[in-house]
Image 1 (cartoon, rainbow, N blue to C red):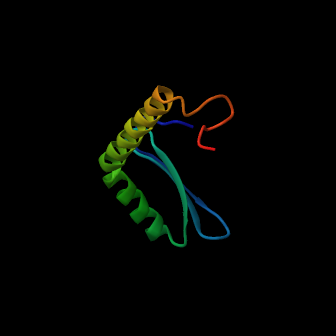
Image 2: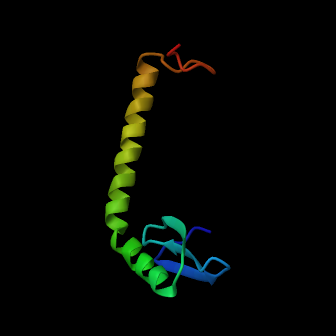
Length: 85
């Protein structure tokens, strides 16, 4: 489920707690913690890193677009082959 604002769900399970969190950009993460305090700390930390995570994602997307453009320019990817054989 994609969310557009900060949110979280903490579920008790056999291991401890399942933590599902969404940042203010809708990015989702799921982790398991042993204590409720660890779960709360993780959520706050995830939200604090929201802008940094968004910048890193944008940088990764830009790099992927550039790699695709290079592949097309030099015909590296052709059909099912990567052209590097």
